[in-house]
Length: 144
View 1 (cartoon, rainbow, N blue to C red):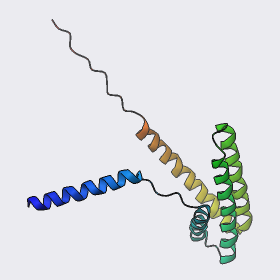
View 2 (view 1 turned 120 degrees about the horizontal axis):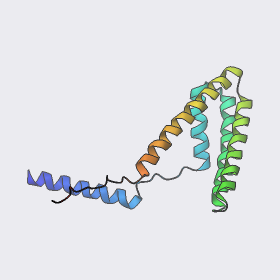
View 3 (view 1 turned 90 degrees about the horizontal axis):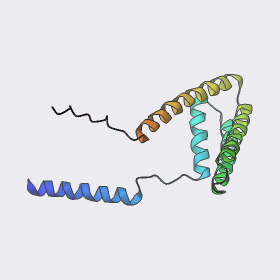
């Protein structure tokens, strides 16, 4: 029994150390991988044909490369950088919408709204977790 506990403790320690060394973070996907994943996700949601899927994957690839380039350019004016990234995203969004049929456009708009709501909830949750928790003030009864 003691040996089993020691083995479990060692395994737990090794896993913890390995996780700490990698930072617990996943490797960032390449622009090509991100484009392919995004196109496949959209293809499933909107029932895209192969031709549409390929063109949309190309649009996502162009967007992903532009975003990566913008990200690499440094930490200049954050607001200007954010505006430029939003412009890149909006341009890609317009190009994607142009590739879709009318029923697909309706599904696409509904999907975007769903994602927007999900992100709002996720951001609120993240903000709550990051905010330091301050304990309530300690009051002591007066000494008589």
